[in-house]
Length: 373
Image 1: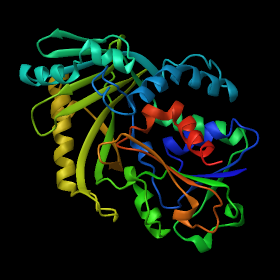
Image 2: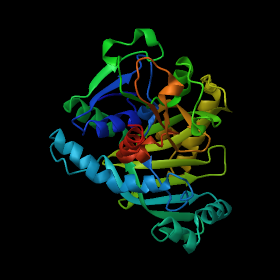
Image 3: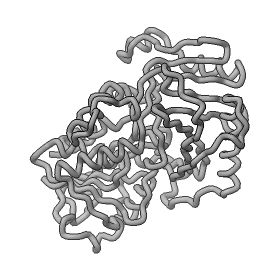
Image 4: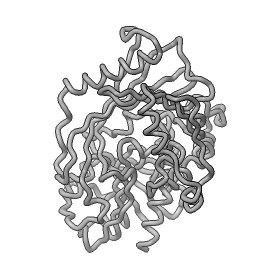
């Protein structure tokens, strides 16, 4: 069975890794020649904020992914025979998440948002609350996480290539230019992030699942690599979020082993049902957000802005309504693509959230494919 995964960001590579474990599948990864994956501009934070988002339909999947993360990473590192494959200290960390608020009112608002009744927690089958008010302006959450985005993307690609996954560079919007390898596909998985609406429109797919018909929330987001040789993330912390009441509401620090990242500066582009990709926001607005971010973190660390070097990475992001993850299938009768015999599965993670679901997204996609066989 031939399955083509389009997009080699975090979701595309994670889906291909899961598919490549099955010997009966012939797996391809296709990337666009002029497409820059938003995943490359991530740190990435694996934040679930205890039960804050437990009402999210994908919260359980986040917890499942977090449970799988360390062993998933170890197994892949062993597979490509990395030295000290079991040492994840520089690329992955599970620990405390700490929110530091600029005033008590902001902390109170988050505290009330985070708390849920014991009955609600029991109904959802969640563990008891792991959230603590450690001071009037500080809230802590147990079992938050961070993973090196760059390392994980490189690791996934190496593993996929070792297993025989074939990588192609193709403009998927031009059906007539598809190479022979992409003829007679059994199923196709779209993990193309902000390009997804454009691809679906170019393929003339008009009947979409309800989840893909929500208002499209476009934003332009950035992650910064920080140069702070004299400052290390405290040993017990995986994430440190500084929440201000100014123009830059929050700034999250993560990292370990001499690496320190800050995220995320996010500038809204559009909130619309229009499938056209919006232009990035003005550079003036982006720079304003960057200056606010520097001010926020410099104030917390008590260092002058001029002493805080930032190396920014930017990417376009797309969300479907307020969903952090969309995994939906489009039946052959609706896509009518002559090259694809079966279904198209769309897997989309909004605003860098693909890293939250990376270890388990493949199984979600496989379930959609199994339902179609």
